[in-house]
Image (cartoon, rainbow, N blue to C red; front, side, top):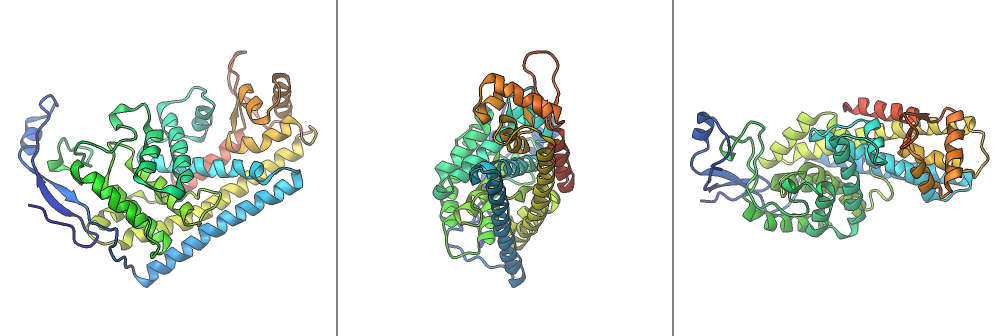
Length: 410
């Protein structure tokens, strides 16, 4: 019999369980995995009243204002630099926007236990030697870009597209497809019987996602409250075999962009959540029990931390950039000078990358690298004459410092 959800709290239903015959398990585990199990029945939230305390709503609204101000301030900073250097705003803003997106993607991945340091991510971005975690985080960058790019059209289809980008080539995850089997959460659980949380049976996933999308498009709710609830509901539905957390946090950024809270930047909210992941996971559990207040508070607190750390990150990068500009002796408009903003976002470069972003020929790209080496802006980090790679170590140090502040380790 179904026990339907009441308010935001999940209900429970009994489902029959067929144990995988070829799965290795102890006698105790086999004993515990017998018989029916209980799966969550998600609340229908499309038109559900959303009420939080006046204090939480005020904090959420203050957080939204801080995010909007951060977006505007960094855009203005890029505009001033563009004016002084005779470049377009897009040219000057793109590296800062990209580095914020990458730090957010790395933090979101770290919440799921996928860790990669700044150096590894920089190497992965130019397809130099990098480990599987760096490749996964790099894929998450692209997935988040795709999700934010589809902010004007948030649908189940656009969420599937982000998932496919994130986990393309990993067939175990069924990239771009809703799950077709029961999943459960609990590192030591071999069946849903002993899991810490059992998401809805896969037969309920499509309908639950349609309901979630209807909630996402409501216009009667404070934005951050709506984002927090939508994210928690997404995690409760758990629509994919893998990648739910990362896609669920990308959904938040798509919603912020859709609501015009952010216009050009991705504020590192996941970095704010990463500062206290146990509290974040407890808030998700509280949501499933019908209490939405903790997840709203977590998102408000994470937003304040994100803006504070984001501002410090941008200030540090600006100091590095100003130091480079004073040390580099090449003329204004040279390939070496045009490469400087790109080094903020992509501190590992090879000749092919320099050619691509500056639009110069091979000989000019090589000369630009020589000039940057002479100014001690980049240092060669690979041996041999082929596949040479250079690194802007000052940027790596700034990114590592950001990771330390939010509790990440690479």
